[in-house]
Image (cartoon, rainbow, N blue to C red; front, side, top):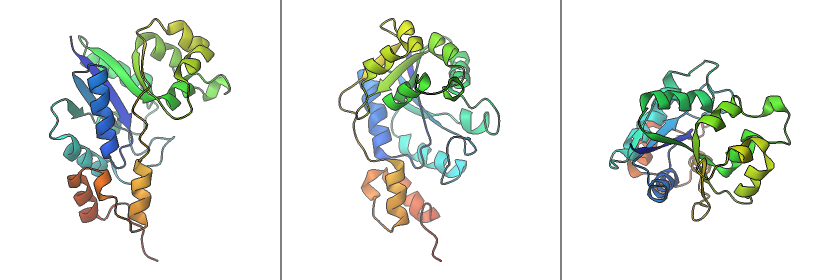
Length: 216
């Protein structure tokens, strides 16, 4: 039985921090594989800045030389435009594909807080969160100012599910702040973020004219 981490994000574009984070998590959590899962362009809660095809092409370039990394277009294709754009359905899908492996959903501590945020009305918390927490495991990355243990203890759902194996908390050394939005802003302003993302991806962005502000 192998250990697999499901790493979802917009990857708009994929950055060196995404790759470093995935590699660090794979090492610390002893994962055999990390599956990069770009979300669909038409998600209701995110606004992509470029097409599914461009993000997929760049992701393939970025992970080509790491045998532990692979990508899945499940959310891009299977969930595009449907009501199933929720983590519960994604994890159930991968459970069916890899029935003999141990799966983890990789997320930041900010998402851990959001799953069952007691300060939000019930209808604004994560869909199918009870089934998601009961049936799956999580690797949680530290984020500035978030106490992960406190976030778990504050939620009745999370604390009652915490058996010592449900949440693998990684609280050291993952606090790098270079984001996809920072890179997009630099490109739009005529900046030079070349060394913040894989070189093939940077060259692809230049060739395709991605993220660059149109001149009026």
